[in-house]
Figure (spheres, each protein chain N blue to C red):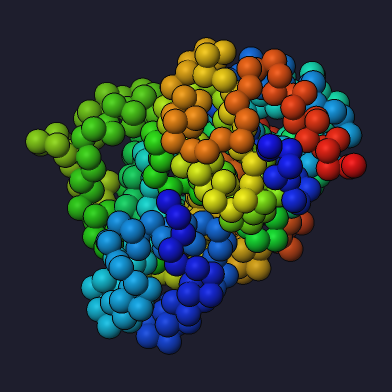
Length: 273
Length: 198
């Protein structure tokens, strides 16, 4: 793929997005953003940058597609099973001591990981006293999350992940298969609070004992990473847990000194100060 | 011919391979001149979490520092970076790494095409792209991109590759500077730098 949309044109687009819609992508990692924008440009068969720019500026439906396509919405249930095993074995027993559990999935996309967490809570007997806050910048992916319907072709992989994460139940008891889709049990979704939230511009909105933000920070530059981690720090109880993606780290952030990573080196940190 | 086309010193060597490439990499890397002033990025298609094994293997065999590429790491000369499994590896204009878990490309994540294209964008003529044995065409578009930006392309001779599809596609589709049997790749790379120093 030759890059049709050049850096200076991307600067123009990002400026438009701020002026027309109030979305700020200027602190996103540029290499990935540039590839995503160019991918969409060729996917939707634009013939000139002028037309592309015009469409985004004037068509708010297309703008939503633009945001959904340039942000990455690839996710899976029980992604990195050993991470979920650690949540099961080391984090949930601590959360169990609270009378009420609040968990925030920031940048949750279509919610496969939120459903995974709900299943873990259910199996630990904690779902009834838990609320899972699921937020993302894209309203459309959140609509899919609310429905809890995922493509059946991925279920075999999810089922294997579930077992690797220490799951002992029959995974198929959590969903009903129909045609090409699996609809997950509504008792899981009943404990989810779903809302749009933009990590670039929105503030803290509650206090949590566990915050998960997996494979979101890799798309931010260092400055925006620090800002998001600051926001998580403000939103986390003392002795609460912060969980990131497999290749993400807080070691370069100012919040680092207040946190201690779990001994098994999964990307889960406990707030100790 | 290829030697004469070098107008700018090579700063980055990007090596891509799939099925049948591991042995080639394990022989090629230790045979490189230990004082080459370039950075090396290796992108291969492997099972999840096996990058640590490759890092260990190369560390044991090579005098170069070898590590998994981490997001925001600045690429340093004379260092070997291994692309982590299950992430695409991109390069920013400031020569730091970015990771991306977007859709697989050519059924692959990491995709060789993505890293090659990104390297070409940032390093232009200072990239040497190398494609080895493999069973799909990932990396071919990337080589084309490197070529377009004035970089240099080297491909393992398909007749010497365990799985010849990947290098054969490259030779058929892109104007490759040099096609060499596996055991001559390291010597050729070393000689490129000799030429540069003259």
